[in-house]
Amino acid sequence: MSEVFVLAQFVGDKVAKTTGELATCGARIGDVTAIVLAAPGKGAALASQVTSGRIAKVVVIESADFDKFGVSASAAVLAHIVGEHKPAALLITSSAFGKELAGCIAVLTDSGLITDAVDVSSELVATQIVFGGSSTVHSRVSHGSAIITLRPNSVTPDLEKSSPEILNVSVAVGESAKHAEVISSQPPVAEGRPELTEAQIIVSGGRGTNGDFGPVETFADLLGAAVGASRAATDAGWYPHSHQVGQTGKTVSPQLYVACGISGAIQHRAGMQTSKTIVVINKDPEAPIFELADFGVVGDLFSVLPQASEGVKAHKS
Image (cartoon, rainbow, N blue to C red):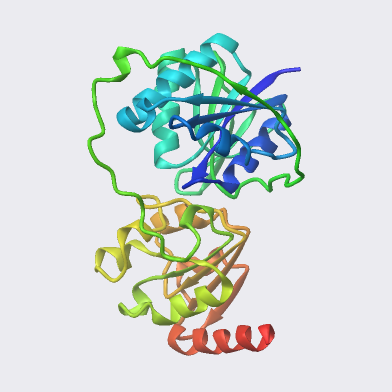
C-alpha cells in the first residue's frame, strides 16, 4: 500500500484540527505517517497528541533550527525525508506558511505542486476552486511525490482515537538552509475567538457596518464564531487586516458563513464561497452576494443582527 506523509500542525502546544483533516484525506490514498517538527525537548509532548484514527506512524524530528531559520530549515528536513522515502504524497495545510513550505519542498525534490486543494481522491486527483471561484479544476501531479496543500475545513476529520507508532528521527539541517536567520518573531495575540481559517462558524462584516462591528461581534460570540471582514472594511481601518476574507486576504471554508453588510465583490466571494452554508444579511436585494446565499435576509444588519442575537440567547436558555 502507498505511503502518505502529512505535516502535523499545532496551535501553540495543542494539535490543530487541520492535522486530522490531512490524515483523513491521506488515508484514502495509503498508510499515513505524520511528521512532527519540534524544538528540542518538545517532540514527545506534541507527538502524543497526534492520535487521529487515520494515522499509523508519527515521525518526530527535533531541531532548534526550525525556529532559528524558519521555512528554509523545515523545507530542507522535509525534502530529505520525502527524497529518502518517496511517499505517494505529502499533504500540508494550506496557509501562508504551508504554501511557502510546499513550494520549497517541491523545488528541492523535483516534485509537482498543487496548492489550495479542497479535496484529494484515492487516485491522488486534487480538486481546486479557481478563477475567483468561477471554475472547478481536477488535477494530478505527474512527476515525483505529490506535494499538496489542503484548504482548512474542506474535509471532515475522522476523530476516532488510535495509538500510532512514534519514531524519533535525527535529520541535520544543511548549511544551504541557513542563509536567512529569524532574529525576532511575535506570536499572534489570542482574542478568545477561533482562528479565522480553522473556524467552523464565521460572521463577517463589510461596508454596511459603517465601521461599527459591535453587532457582528456580539452575534459571533453567541455562536462561538470567528469574526471576518471584507476588504472594504479593512481598507477603511474598521477592522484589522488579519481578519480580511477574500482573494487578497484569507480563504475560509467554514460550516456556516454569515455575511453582514457585504455586497459580494468577486475578490471576497473567492475567499468564502466554498463555505458549506452561507447566510446573507444585506439591505440591497440586488447585492451580488445573494447569488451564493443558502439563506438571505433583506434588511439592515443593525436591525436584523440584534434580533438574531436575542433569538440565539432565547434558544440557549
